[in-house]
Length: 574
Image 1 (cartoon, one colour):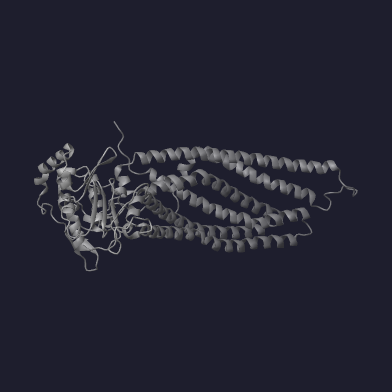
Image 2 (cartoon, one colour):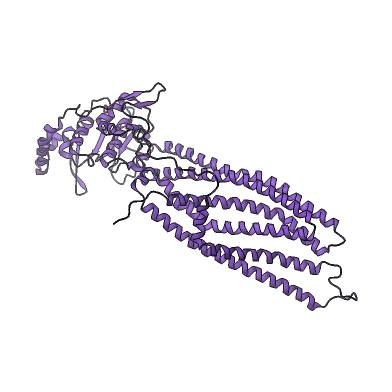
């Protein structure tokens, strides 16, 4: 709040008398309840919205429900005031939302009530009931010793009960004073206002018992139950979390969006050619340069420089072909990724736009935002790259195992298969845990976004109620739950790395032993080739497991997108 001109006098504690308002004086700021013209409600039950962090007092609660004429509305609901109202109170009418917001202010213990035209969204009968029970009865237990500042267009209805009136006209103050001073004013506008007030005065004295009170009873376990309903009024359901492996329909949907089986087949051929040529160029050069007689002719003279240049030309040719296939695979992969992202995003957007109203009532905006932001981001930028590197690592691992086995002994192939089976087992255990943790993380991230959007839309009211700390505590709780799921994803990677290193060490050790047993028959170049590729077995296998895990986690996002594509749709227009 910024004071541009003049001074502001506000009620303060008894120890301070007419002290000028300042931001350092929290006496009034901590005791203000605000009702905006556009009511802001939490995504919670009606009771939680009215209590708004205050302790439950049955007598005061029932009195507030009667003052705001909420009894008949709650009686009509199956779960009464335990009914969830959805985000922004979407399941309530405008008048019901306004009365719940008013009840929240009345139930609080705040001494200053700032109410912005709370009667604009209610009908005449309900408006008279609210005025007669809230603003007219200033000596009631709920309204006693409270200052109420009401902004309204219902002057004739509210003026008879006001202590001080400020009439605004054309952006300025047209009149200020007591109702008696206003009545005595010669201004024709004031006269017409009081004539309208006199005409409606008899209607304002309605029977206070015309709205049946809404009673609640206490349960034995100190929980509060409603006498006419059950506690099954949940509107927002927990997000469905799929369990087990990702279904083939999800993979098929993504491959079809990329270009179908032809696209997958051509990419696979290009990656196989890339990995084979990349390995074969090293094998070719190792075979040419490693032997004792490889660099000398029959008479012991050095081979000509042209032969060595020819070897380098062949090596360079294999490298260029490998690079060409790799570039083709990357271009195909990223072209398919862009195509699939566009197609699936359009399908997802169409499914959400044409979803039934019930879907939006029961689905928090945070979940929808999470699907269109985080999950779509993974599908757009990460999924195809992870899939490419996962397939590349798998083929590289198989080719490395074959190359080392051919140049050592068949026994190495057996050891390699045993280690590979151990990798498969570790990968399966690791991926099972990671997949479920990823799904859990996705379901815990949406509540953080929902609360954030709720805070943004209700920031002015939260500041008025001085409830920032309450919402910060709730945000910390939700974010802690999300971080717990995130830590559960990261922790098993250390478990995996230790076991993968032990298994890979067995491969390197075995390769070194087999090279030593054949030291008389194997060239130094091939020995170096075998040891280098056997040493890289650890790196390739670890990369494969982690990329496959990332592949599964990324497809969990596609699985979630696929789930939201299946939401119930509105009937097509005829």
